Length: 414
Image 1 (cartoon, one colour):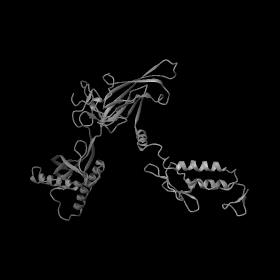
Image 2 (cartoon, rainbow, N blue to C red):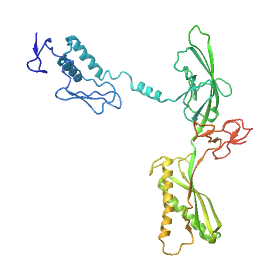
Image 3 (cartoon, one colour):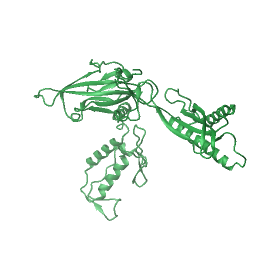
Image 4 (spheres, rainbow, N blue to C red):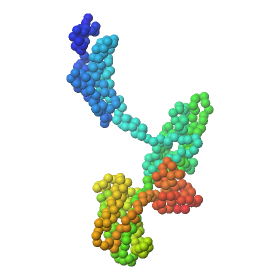
């Protein structure tokens, strides 16, 4: 039996069985399908009036097969010269493709399960070494990375009857409580890392490669350090030609200058602190002695370190960005003073800024008991890391000082 096929030329005849009506499942489907998966992104297939499939711009991964797309595939199969599909195969193909696109099949996994997979993919994990202790830095009062009781070589190897035993720096078994946890696979996790938790941790791994093999034991050491981000600020130094050093005008000018600078950066949630103000007699070449004021002041973001958070309502909350904006405003202020003096036709005032004397230095500070050392901690060079035993930091400096009598981590006195 032959039949006319409207998809080809009118004269063409194809030896295919008569087409039976499609099941009601497919007949009731609209010509325009959009399939939404349970996620924030969506995949879509759009079919025009001629049955051509048009992939939407928002299609990102996942199944985008639709009933209309399956019909297009069948039509193309009929048009080709390849062996035809039997009627039963056609229906199975339609059903299979429809199930792929069905919203009920799109929910293979719950959102909670998928979210858990994504979170686990972001977890940082550390493995041990047979040759040296591995240094791991954990931010104070934060969760630690996963510390695996295994080496890189054994990580992807099948181990038979493995057992894991973790020991603290004082050679006791690691407790399992709300702050510390050892998983069934031997991973050590700290949920609230404190200064007292810093030290050398040892893990013993016992395992076999094959059942007949004698058990092997491997000991791995990890050195855990608490660290914090450094406090930071800009320190400015500027020089002014001044009145006589014992003049009251110098004191008044100093207060007025600080008020102007503070008002200049008030919207950036930064504050200015006067570190030092000194008047000196300076001998100038071919100009004799003159009086000069040496100003040293600091610009500090208000929520930096232990200063306490502010509202951040008038500026971005990133302290580095705000600090750099404050620096630019202060630089412009001193540059404008020079421009004004150059355009001035009258004699110079008694107190004025000396061009080219502004110096700016970025300064980091660590809290007592912490310090920065890129040689000892190359993997955390800009961190304030807790001081090792044998060192201490008594004040807000950036270095841990030598002290043989200091036997604890984070010492603040010798």
